[in-house]
Structure formats: C-alpha cells, structure tokens
Length: 279
Image (cartoon, rainbow, N blue to C red; front, side, top):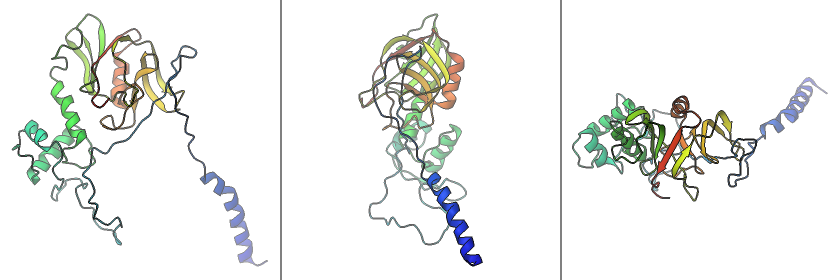
C-alpha cells in the first residue's frame, strides 16, 4: 500500500467516527396540557413562535435565485445609512405618521422613512425593515402611549397592595401600588389558540429564576407562577409576534422579566382582565 492509499485509509477511519456526531438533533417534547403541580412546582410548558414584523410581501414574480456575484445589500430590508431609506409604506403608515407629527397621508416618503427609522432606533425597536410601519411598530405605540398613565382607564384596582396589572386587549402589563406605577408598562404576549390566559384575581404562588418547562423542555427564565401552570416569564422570541402565543403564560422580553422578578414577591397580587384580539 502506497503513501497516498495509507493517507486515504486514515481519513476514512476518522470520518467514520465523526460523521454520526453530525447527525445529532434536538429532542422535541410531546405537546399536551399542563398537569398538576409536582413537588410544589407547577408542571408547565410553553410554545414559542417567531415574527418578522410583517415585512413587505415578496414580489411573486421575482426570481428566487440569488445573484451570481456578491455585492452591496439593497432593497427595503437594508438599514438606512448614508444612502436612501427605501422601506415602502406599511399597513400602519398613517397611524405612525400621526403619532410622529408627520404629514398623515399614508404614503411613504424618504423623509417619512428616515423619521420612522430614527424613532425605532430611539425606542430600541428592531423591525425586520427599518422605517417600515408594520405590526411591531404599531404595537410598540401602545407601550409609548401608555407610559404617562397606563391605568388611565381605571381597569386595574388601586389598593395598598402591590398589584401586577395585565391588560390583555392592549397586550401590556405594569406593576402598581395605589396610583404609583412601580414598573412598566411593558409589552407582553399572552395565550391564544384555545389556551387563553385566565382572567381575574391571582397571587404569585411560586417562583423559579431558572425554570425549565417540564412539558416542552424549554427555558422559562424568571418564572413567577400565578395560576396553576400559568406564569410570567421571559422568552427569546418576539413578544410583538401577532401569530405567536403562549399556552396561557404571560410572556415578556427577558430584560423585562428580570425587572419584574426584582419587583414582585411571593404573595403579591395579580389582576388580569379583557381579551386578546383574535382569541
């Protein structure tokens, strides 16, 4: 056997060992309804979905073939920089124009695009298409509009207790004691698809900073349970996703869930009202 054949034999033997490792995959837990608590901790799972802020639909006549040679990125998904801001008009164009004090004609100009994109950056909003008035941008307006007085409608009772208020119609939550707002308002994502977040009075009954779903084996950081298997907890997904939803939990961004963890304690009251649109 010559040197080349010996080298090939060694390579083949190594490949036979390494290739099975590349075929490993994630184990997916079987879906099912939350079951009663075990050892004092609620059994619960959470299904997550991702969103892209309703980016403009792709032209059905456009070719799906990528360019043969690399070049600078272009099109509405490119981040506005020294070049033109090219995001098209979004479904909430007029509403966002009104909010920002722009000419409310529902038509996108480059000045509109840059103004919307600049506001999105100030709010640390990262839509798929900068300058596009999509679902994420429209939903975030609710957060901004509620900042001065989230309980202006008086839906959450004002008592001496610390209360986590969950507004399902607006998909917002905040914490208050009396009229003083201690946290929020922040965006949430509640249950849907037959798994609604239960309304009414509850209390924080159990907390686990590094909880993992016992059904779906997915992380539920800063979990604070308030109604059986339903809890506040952080998610990696987009809480503004209109098609996503929980199995009854109140999802928050990880940063907001961490802030809520530092604000609430076992025994604190939770009040949930209304109904999420589309459920």
